[in-house]
Length: 319
Ligand code: ADP
Ligand code: MG
Image 1 (cartoon, rainbow, N blue to C red):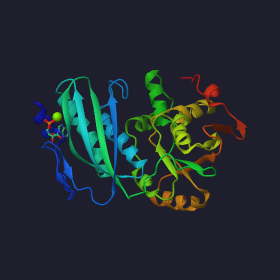
Image 2 (cartoon, rainbow, N blue to C red):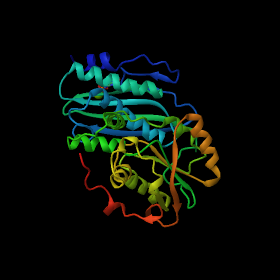
Image 3 (cartoon, helix red, strand yellow):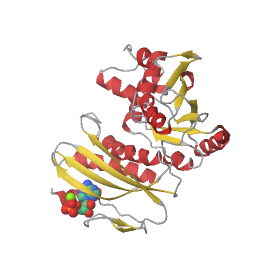
Image 4 (cartoon, rainbow, N blue to C red):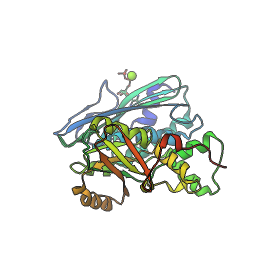
């Protein structure tokens, strides 16, 4: 099967979108941008680096797009289009069927259309560029947080990092349903598109959690020139962390990555608006702390007592 048959067989899907003038098949895709602003983001996933070599191709397809859509969500952008640069070591029908199935499952769930790409031969890697739209001036950047704002996260944290740990150490939880939860978070992250789009005018800053709360939050601290006070007892720990002791729970949820939840700041006077939005969408949002004026510093406390994340984090967790 050649490159063009691969594209036709696995990646050409009917797109009905009056703004899209030219889709897959020409030198470029062409769309009418309308009146909004355009938000663009790219992420690459490399086998052995971003996903395990024996990962389910369906999950690889799903996640490759999900992590890009999550970046759009973190800007408050509505997903519109994406391109796919796919490098594969050889033609593998089973891989391509499962990969494209996972990819389009994600695409359909958030209404984003594939409009072009590139297909090449080499070590497995996937680069996706995702394009979204925002109302002009309503983008939610990392730089708008102010002292006194409340810090929130969506969903639960730590499940995906636990799955990476279990897999890397060939170990298991006692309860298989908790383990399934954890692997679902790693393999099928659900980007918070509706929440992200609803927070324009409510959140003062926002990003998505990909490397872990403790390191991702530093980006907001730096760009907003602020500090943060985080109350560890308020972190929404993933239910899959139930069998771990508190220190390990904290470590996976605060220092572990791959959650793809949103972390954002909201001024106290918008607290009720946020509550209404979250209730309407049926998404949990949890206040985990407060923005301070201590530029660049994150202070962690556990029930009011200072807690050193770096020295008190994960060391060891029993089988
Ligand atoms: P070019 O020679 O101009 O780079 P290609 O031969 O690479 O074009 O691709 C032919 C058409 O197929 C283009 O419209 C391109 O955007 C699209 N395409 C290539 N690979 C993919 C892919 N993996 N998914 C979607 N569209 C693709
Ligand atoms: Mg090409």
